[in-house]
Amino acid sequence: MSKKNSNNKSSSDIKENTRLFLNKSPIIMGIKIYVFIIGIMLSGMFSRTFFAQIVLFLGINEVKETYNPQAVKINTKQAILAARIIALITLLTIMYTVISFSGTSNFNILIPGLLIGFGICQQMEGAALDVITEHMRNSMGAWTTILHVFAKKKRGEYWKEFIEETELLWAHPQIRPMSGSEEALEKIEGKISEDRLVKYMNKGREEMNYYTGIEDNSESKTRFFDHALEWLHNTRDKHDDLNEVQQRLGTWSYAVYLGVGTIIWLLQPF
Image 1 (cartoon, rainbow, N blue to C red):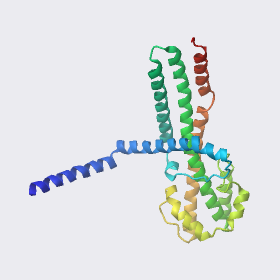
Image 2: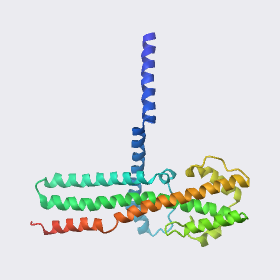
Image 3: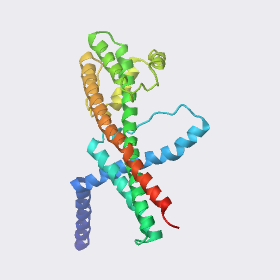
Image 4: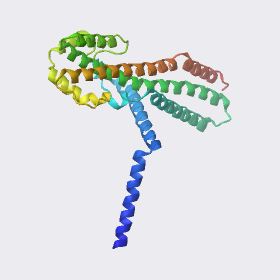
């Protein structure tokens, strides 16, 4: 009986040690992070490719701007690497398909396939980055709206300056109020109470890596708003860095790959 208990304990220890290793190992944690990021990118591209076209076809103009708070926390290097992994997988898939059907000796198919594959994988990388930047835009739009509405209910120089800061953020070509426009925003300002806004901010403050509760006093609120403004600026800068990479990917180079590959394929002897 004691031997059986000893075996059970040993088995439990092995399971526990394995669980701790999987949870604490930097390599495993890194893999989990990139699997998560790639999953967000692929699901975003899939929904855009299929569901967005259906929405457009049906003529639905109002689309709820949602975002994943964890996607917003992704840093620039992680997003770029995950997008490049997707691009590489795309290229390998294309080349595997081409080689499977044409073999390795048919250069009339192999070379155009490689060039077209480069062009497509470059577009996949840009599309993957755009999924993350969209989450960031929606997050900034939501938070600037909430903070702006709250600040307009307060009096004093601090809150006046904060309102100006949110309006400066809206001057960014890709950041806009959650309601879609400043005119529409004015219509909802009177419908939301200050207590409700504080409740919302307390519920979502961890999105900004703010872990202290917002209390019903001026010091607590201004401390949160200072942190929120810094977070918004950092998120905007991160968004702009990714957007710059995305814009470079969407310029002439991918068109060259696709164009040259297509021309070679069209001119090949039948």
